[in-house]
Length: 262
Image 1 (cartoon, helix red, strand yellow):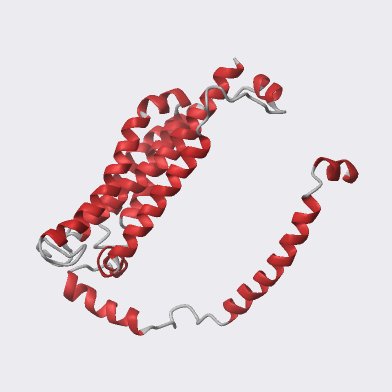
Image 2 (cartoon, rainbow, N blue to C red):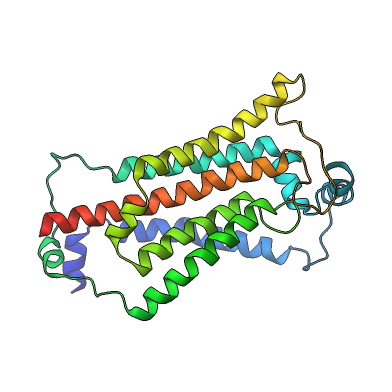
């Protein structure tokens, strides 16, 4: 059996050797680094201690992580958001198929005879019941990141999960109708663009890029932090749109294969 496997994939043994050559030293380095980590709660840094003391006073934000993400290092966060945007676009480009591309898969016969089991009523009821709760919670996390742990990145993933629940509780066709691809693409693009435009607004006002232009508001309120809340909403929109777009592309691919095998 092993000889047949080597004949089918002659490079498997070489890849395994290369993995151990690179992987074993890497594991050793990671283990050595973990041994040197400080105990939980014992690590301190001058930068971290400075921001913990300054975030509430300077930005009226009680969640220091959000203040760092969307204010003190807001330009870096713009780069992270664009990395996610480019990653989604790359995946969509890879998944895109030409109409003239021939279908060549050794498992084609197996796919033609395979039928997905129907969704149970329990899964359908639980999934549909959780959609509204998940969407509401995701929007809360996005809009209240300046007060409690959360923000656009975390809330955007939660919002996208609501659409995944729609797919799990219903079927691929219902999901496809609820997420038209052009609309989702525009939704994601506007989120990424809004973050950059908020940054350029500071330049137009004669300030620095991503400088705050709005009143900071009272501490511990939903409208505190000035433009931090708007940047969080823009990020949440881009993240939610990106993940929904990925799931939509996978669903469209599955539907196309199902239509081709029928």
